[in-house]
Amino acid sequence: MVSITRIPGLVLTEHEFRVPLDHSRPEGEQITVFAREAAAPDGLDRPFLVFLQGGPGQEAPRPAGSAPAWLARAVGEYRVLLLDQRGTGRSTPVGTLPGLAPAEQAAYLTHFRADSIVRDAELIRAQLGVDRWSVLGQSFGGFCVLNYLSHAPGGLREALFTGGVPPVRTHPDEVYTRTFATVLERNRRYYERYPADRERVRALHRRLDAGEISLPGGVPLTSRAFRTIGNVLGMSDGAENLHYLLERDPDSPAFAHDLAAALPFSARNPLYVVLHESSYADGVATRWSADRVRPAVFDEDVTLFTGEHVYPWMLTDLPGLAPLREAADILAEHEWPALYDEEALRSCEVPCAAAIYAEDAYVDRVYSEEVARLIPTMRPWLTNEHEHNGLRAAGPAVLGRLIDMVKGRV
Image (cartoon, rainbow, N blue to C red; front, top):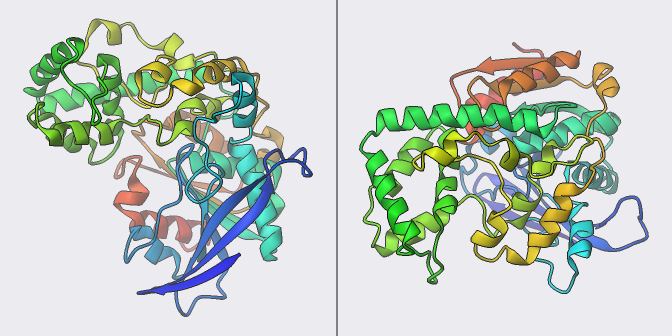
């Protein structure tokens, strides 16, 4: 199915593709993957750039005028394919999988990692009759790009990463040990900038423990769930957004609604909760890695916010996720297959460029630099000018530099 729409400055072509749920069983259950092609009116024959969104479990951005800002730069040289990765957006959705036993839910969810997303992309490329295309991966989208380079490099002209060169053959325990240290530093900086917020946070925790603060709909919020709003501290505007939330009257309806919106993990996107750790599972089981390696200081100091770390209690504390609790436990014990092929990366011939953010709170720069050195065609750009959301906050500049790098202009 193809539908074409014109909005100011862009021609949008909508595609729906049928792909196997399990690529090892192409004759089995089928799901839909949606993609929106965005092109300049005079660029309908330009080469494709496939955008792979962060996540896991996040849909592609929706073009509207200049949003996302980087799109205007991209369509100057490409047709951009905004892929709703399987389970997201207008692709076949993943909710709490009612009617399935926990083991069946877990088995279903094993098919939503980067490796399956890349195999979807290859089927779509063939259906569109494209010889090779370029890919741009933001955050988790970069994990998908590295899997692409490992297992289907013949389909790629160029590969671009923004804040998303993942570790290879590194246990999740090591990853989360480093990111917890970064989160502690972000807490220190936050309270240095907004020292009065520490007492505000203590007071909120007392009220949370007393059951006095609820989300819209009357669902009480737990103290430990509240701490996850610190996930924003890795973004360029995160400290300010957190402060502006905390300065609100906690008894106001606006506070409850803004608080609900600030929670990074929710039933709106169950894949983000149940598959987050599997994104780092390069041939291992995670066994609730972040929960096991979390530093004791987080138990000792209630004012410390947590980051992009998933805990088993989230499947009971957060509204709507309880139906996946047993499946999440099964997935935590699942021995995931390897995501990357180190030898294939060492022999890579696809031109690559990566923005590596020096103080990235989500994808640690040490591992990104290590992997960048594996790839002979990689041109890394290490910068402290941008945070993890550099593509969103300064899209034309970030993407423009990467395009110039991969094309050898700089």
